[in-house]
Image 1 (tube, rainbow, N blue to C red):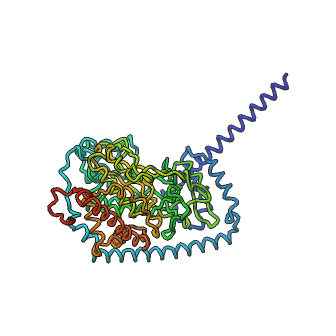
Image 2: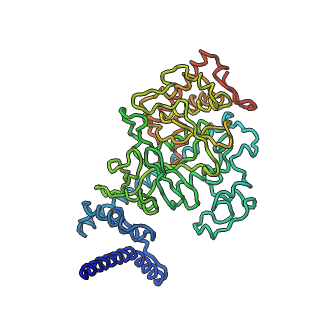
Image 3: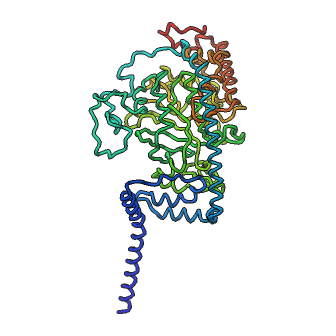
Length: 560
C-alpha cells in the first residue's frame, strides 16, 4: 500500500515538473524580448536596420517570426515550420555556399532593381505622352460624359455627413487619423465640427456614394484613393471567408481596408478550353481592367481598384494574425516564399502562390461601407447560369424567358431591367460568365444602380467571344439611350475603345495590365453588341428598343 502511494506521488511530481518546463519554454521568448528591449534602450535606442537579402530571408523567417510574435502566438508553430524547412536543400548549406547564394541573390536583386527602374521610367514616359495627347480627356469632354444628375436630397445620399459619420470609428474627428493608438484613449470632435476634407480618402469615397453612382466623374478623391491603395502601410492581413478562391482582406494605417486578389496567371495565359466557367481562375489584372472599363463606359459602378506589388514576407506573413493563413507559408525549392491559404479551389501546395523571391502582384479593391452602416441587398441574377456540368438554366432553353422576367418585381418597373442590360454588355466586353448575383444599397430601394462587384473571371479568353453572355440583350432587346450612344461613340476611330483602355490602364502601377489581344477583343465585341442592337431595332423598332433616359439633357445629341 505504501509503495502504491509512493508511486502515485512520483507520477504527480513528474507531471508537475513537465508542466513547469512547458511554462518556462513558453515564457522564454517573452524574457528574451524584454531583455532585447532593455539592452536597446540602454544603448540609446539605436537598432540595427540591416536589410536581409532574398537569399538569407527564407532560411531565417520562422525564427524571426517566433521572436517578433505577439505574446499569445504559439511558438510550437515556429518549431514545426522550422522542422519542415530542415529538409530544404538550402538548410544544410555550408557558410561558404551560403555566401555564394547571398552574392547571387544580391546580384539578382540588383538586376531586378534595374529592370524595375527601367520599367518605371518607361511607364512615366508613356504617361507623359498620354498627357500630351489624351484621348480620355477628349472623351470625358464629350457631351455624353457631361450629363448632370438630379438634385440630391438626404434620401439620395448614402450617408448624412453631420448625423451618420460618427458611426465610423477613428476617422470622424480632426485628429491625425493615420496614427495608430489606443482606441479607448482617443477623443474626437463632434462630427459637425470636422471638415470632410480632413477625412481619409476611403471615408470621403464612402460619403460621396449616392442613389445614382458610386463616385462622380473627375472626382479627385478617387485619384487620391488609388494612390492610397498603392502607398498606405499594410497593418494587418486576414483571409476573406466564403468564395471559391483565396482572397485577403488588407487593413491600412489610416483604418481603410481593401480586398487583395493575388496574381495566379501571367498576362499571356488564357483560360484552358476544358475549364468550366465556375472553376476558372480569378485574375488580378481582370479586376483592375474592369474598374477602368466601367469608368470609360460611364457606369461608375465598380469600386476603385489598383494594382500593387506586395512583399509577401513583410506585408503579409509578418503582419497577419490569421494562424490558418500563417501556417501555409513555406519556402519553395527555388528559394521563393510561397503560401496557399484556405479556400474551396486551388488552395494547396500544388497551387501555391509564390513570390520572386517574396514579391507578388495583386489587385487591391477599396472596400464599400461596412454592412452595419450601409446594408446591401443581394439579388439573384435572372440570367444566372446553372453552375452544373450537365444541367442548363431555364433561360438557355426558353427563348421567351425575358417576358417572364419583365412581369416579375423589381424588373416590371423602373430602370432595373435596363441596368441588367448595362451589366450584360459590361460582362460581354470582358468575357465574364460568372455573374450569378448582384448587389444594391438597401437604403435606395429598387430605384438605384447595380454594383458591379467581383470581376476576376473576366479577360480570360481573348480568342473567343462567348455569345451566351449576350442572351439577356438578345431576348429583351432593351437598352438605355445613354448606353447606346456611348457604345456608338466608342466604336468610332476617334474614340476607339481599345485605345482608350490602353491609355487608361497606363495609370496603373502594374503596366501592362492587359496584353494587346485582349484590347483588340474589346473592339471586336463592341461591334457584336451594336450588331445585336441593330437586329433588335430592325425587328421591334428604335423606340421599342432604346429607352430615353436623357430627358433634361439638352446638350446631348445622337441616335435617331
